[in-house]
Amino acid sequence: MSQSNISIILVDTQLPENVGLSSRAMFNFGIEDLRIVSPKLEWPSEKAHAVSVDSHSIIDNVKVYKDLKEALSDIDYSVAFTARRRDMNKEIVIKNENIESKCGWSPFDDYKFKGTPVSTIIAGKIKMQDGKILGDPEGTPLEFN
Image 1: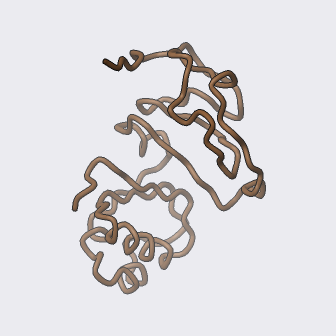
Image 2 (image 1 turned 45 degrees about the vertical axis):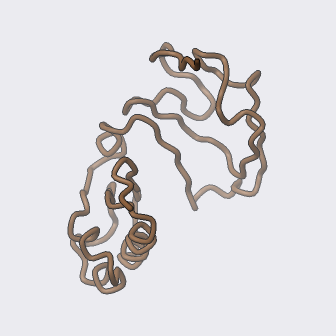
């Protein structure tokens, strides 16, 4: 099963084994587009290839980008996770009344998440950074029949 509309982006990756293991997880779920931003490792990497097992085609087609903006330039919706921030255990609840949205609601209303949203990127543009809205709302509200 192909998930051709999903991309995985690794930023500032230090260990080639993490890239290889990420590709293995992607392979298990049919995700093929792996992007690396500003890697702190030599690429391509024999170590990444060695641990990728059945996902060699993903490793062989990795795209490397100089910055996150470039890697997200063709992405319409992104969700980010990090191991760097230490507030990942803080639980937040998404509430429609607390979001800044042109349509006034979120499909994630009442969802509980661990971690703190750092930024929102829509159509490759950073629209929220560290809790501050950047620019004017864009897009068309969803309509349901």
